[in-house]
Length: 425
Image (tube, rainbow, N blue to C red; front, side, top):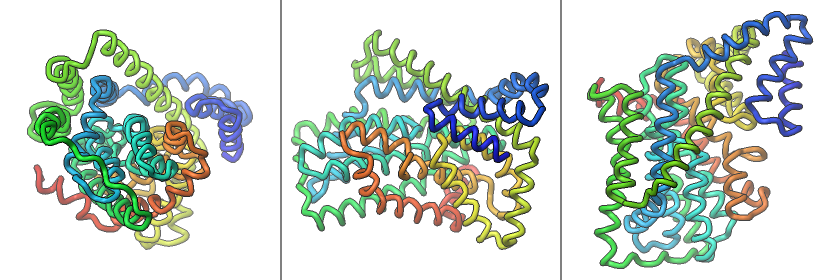
């Protein structure tokens, strides 16, 4: 297995995409271990990895997000957040976090959120006198709110891989997302007082009503998704299709900002993004097959049990391993790759599967904003035109806040389970 890991790391270092790195490392492993005849089963493993009807939710939710973004929804949400926040010192930083929370119900992916919110908020904060590295770091930290609330692509994939209720997972991530949002706002206000950040511009009175009317239909999307699934009106897959149609309708009929060219571009972007996601899932299924051959999951579970049988200690160890994994892998690939191991360890932890899913997803998302290779850091650094080192230093306190919420999710079941219990039992 050491050879496999070395081959995978070498592929990453020389710039090969993650999906192909997983596949090439798997092929190299079989060749070196004189098991190349098993290659005949790889196509079947790849197809079985993505042969799940619920995975159709991913392209539909991606399409809904792309249509919303093409309809200039990001700017509407930012302006509405500015209306809600009012004139407080450091208000533009608070608007950044609040807008990220609102946009979470549209994107479902941290990278999409970092790109969309960052393109609007980072230049605005720089123009208003904020430290550009801080503006970029705050945007990156806010981006991990997206995968915690509907329509989270990572929670969907976890539900597919484990058979956990996707609607329960959607509900379970909402409270931790609000807690994280509140703590980031508190940090932004504290930093504003300490560094004397400016007051945001006033939203003209005559614009306030129209801003609310324009933003509310988009903010209603998560309600349609969760409400429809919980009421039995439609399945998760049907909910995703409804979300895409809803996004198309409000973009063309209500906002009237979607042209035929933009719609075509949204479909094209959805196709390419979906292909990338599915390729990662398929290739990671090959890696899971290698792990099974080596009996790695049981070996890791036995090793952890040998260290301690205390569930709290095991949870801390698992979170540490996942944080390291999240540093180097895209979350969807990390999920597929780690699920065989997680399935062996899960019975030892005495956790509810819904709580466990939110913990795993939040953990892997923190890896996307953690130096030195967090993907969201690269995105916001490019948008803000700031050195990665400066953004990495600025985001460290925010990573501490994220880790605090992660520990709360891991050790306080009520944080994730109260809402699914109240709504539908």
